[in-house]
Image (cartoon, rainbow, N blue to C red):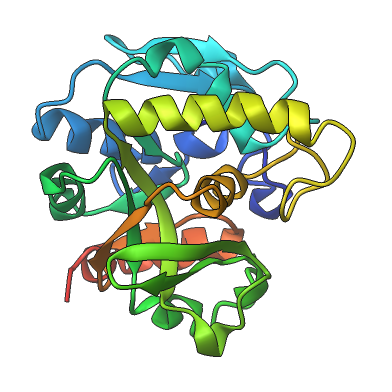
Length: 249
């Protein structure tokens, strides 16, 4: 998902999309593509939006969200709905993660699996531009997520933070599409979980709807091994400490 625009990354992203920020010797998206291919995933789709014409990688297929400025990440995802016929990996484009994180996710056999950092609070130590209220926190019982979203779970009650990496097997992908279509009809004139509408919704809003309707959503736990680049402060910190940040405890 590479459609969004973040004002918190200006002026770094004045002339480029977030995913083309360079960390070390490679861009965020380059690092993600390398991880996917190293794990045997070559059929890769990117949803573009903000300055999308600058995202040009060979052997990648593209979809365009031309309404990126007025819609949310869920809308961007469903621009690529035709690609959801079978198993697929969903990933934010503004994160870095160690290859081992993806390997853990691929090894899970649940219909819907989300990667969750249970040591998430360390990411907010001296992180001033991205408050904890913006974290996509989760509650869990056993191996299932029971609640997920931004600014709805007190930090003291959170099991962990969703990092922006998920896997859907064929049945899970089918459920995702069905509940999305149902949500468009059922929430046409009202807020959709933490968002004002389905069009402006987060990915996690639809995950919460799946949970509420009884679909099992499982968590794959990690402790570190990833980073989010959402602000200039994040960019500076990750650029300085890349190797230690990607180390899994």
